[in-house]
Length: 445
Image 1 (cartoon, one colour):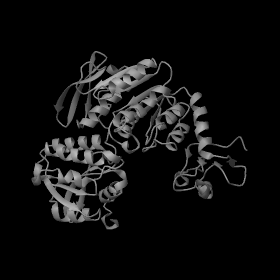
Image 2 (image 1 turned 135 degrees about the vertical axis):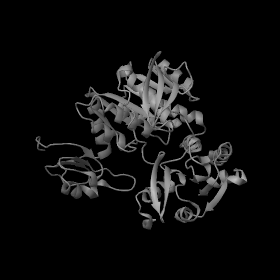
Image 3 (image 1 turned 60 degrees about the vertical axis):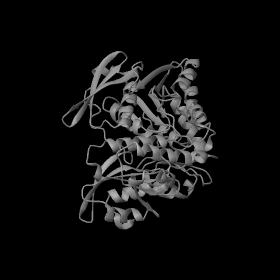
Image 4 (image 1 turned 90 degrees about the vertical axis):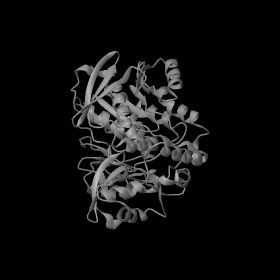
């Protein structure tokens, strides 16, 4: 092989290959990357790692491409001086990673994994794409079952591990929520010696995770919205024109920052980010506006004005995913949105992957909604009918037969300047539908 080959980035998607990128031809769940080697070369790949291919100057042939990528990433990790931050938990991983990545990149060279690159394909790929001069690498670790967090965090070997919270997301592969908490705690096994664990003190499994970390002699940093014994806690919020001044205690010293949004999840992410940054930086010296321009990640509560049939409506997009914790949080945020209540409408779909807990958890959401001022609750899906049946009668909107009826509902039931919140699990297809809605491609629906 030619040793002068230039390599910029690595990708497992031939369509995203640019000049001098390396293409790993991986056989995934749906597609075999070996079928796209020619496309990768056409797009400018300087090198391809593949199996079942003919050898050539620009190809390395291995038995298992994913294994090769994983081992190469792991070796690379051992030789990097970058500080690696690894985020797991049931909710908020991607949002926290984005907030932290965008904030730290204002003061240092940072690489953070794109989108939700949090599985056995995305994690080693993101690690491989770290640059030599990066001070920080930020990764997200997802899981469906026991052992996955352990496997992925072994590759990453984080200097800082973060557990955002524990909820019923992906519980179908577990007996109970305690097992979910234990599976997330696997990250603690692989934090580097003298490393740090950042924990949410408001989470019910905080003490369990703290105990495991103490046994491993890992340093613990805690954050909280209300608990004043946490290392980082929220002291006060002051409204100042179009922004908010957030007063925070960081290791017994008070500081403040300006933010645009005080939705509960955004505040939690802000405190977690401050906790992580405080390990490496003096937070007193940070620019007070460093968090001000952060935009909410698409599908996680961002608001978009959409024109449809000569009327404008605001889409509150919560369609990226749904589980009990994120749905309760989204409902609370929407309830607190300071607009006339008659202008708020909801379309809720199923929370998936909840196994035997599905009925109980969907029923509980109905009770949660009944505590709010929200009405006009429309539903589409099978499991969400349990939520609908548990709603006070005056809150019930329509039961939609399928997703295609969403446009009909918008056309007939929404008035000019109404706010429509849409939320459901990713696999319900709502995320794609809402993206088309936001980009004006209604005819494609």
